[in-house]
Length: 446
Image (cartoon, rainbow, N blue to C red; front, side, top):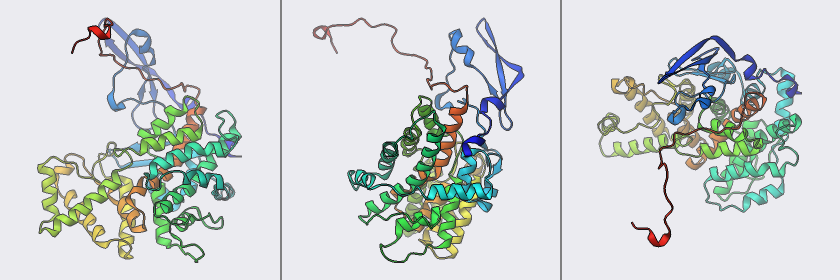
């Protein structure tokens, strides 16, 4: 069983350096231990400050590490993204989404037998029961699919009896595979229900991505063959989104799980965080912007005119720039190749693809953007690709969530194996009134 092959706890491989960082505040001086990283910046362990009347203040956690982890490494300056040490380029070229899911969750690439067993186990769980289908049917048809997806995953544990324990390794295994399998089916249901189309049952004989496309777009009782290019493209986009270190939603999953909330509840919390437009809605914004550029050009203007307008008004250009990457997003380079393949195969709105290619070329040649480290990110291409596949913009973030499931599960499981884990309870710097005397309502004045 895979649970018997858990990799080392992060606390076991985190190395406390003999060196220490010195911090002096007024007359007090602190020696703070340094935790050595295998790649990237070392960490300064500041836990002892809480006993000395000081806390650190770091809005947005820009320089705060909430944990040590051996899952994903990002070097935004060098365009590096690695899962468990494997470059994203190699995984996208040589692996599949479910194999990458295994790598993230268990810490190593599976043997052929392990991989095939895992795939069979996941695909064999993709069916959801009739009671769950009825549960989904109780939501408004026009509700946003991210709200429905988070509610569905939270409720899924109640339909999978005995798999919500955070202490039973077998229950965790069951929950892991249930969420991987059934979230795919739920996502296809949400897509079809928005269109008032009949829901389709899974076909165990097909691959994970191939059957997802069939469940989204097939006509009942008619033979359906997925376009191999679309299957390959979607499989690779799922890999590219499978994890991204300590982003907003992953942090939420860890914080939620630190209370001993179940894996179902923790993943549902991550979906809620991802639903925010500043996190999961970027590809929809990029697609909308390219559509705006098309209308702009119809008025006799050019892409360069549009870019100049953005610069003059100091606006953000959707699809460019990233919180972590200060160079070309490595995921964007891979996604762009699939955008080119789909364009060459004449799949989707070719005008939009052409505009995106030209927009990237104009921006890349402009010192205004390169001097500000505003390079193309993955969102420039994913919305175009999802639209070409036939998905509505409202579904884009649900596919993002489907892709991120393995990463969330991996972080939740890693957190529970780490003896240093404590329930998340950030401190604050209080800046409110020191004391107010209570005044009865009759005596209060504006």
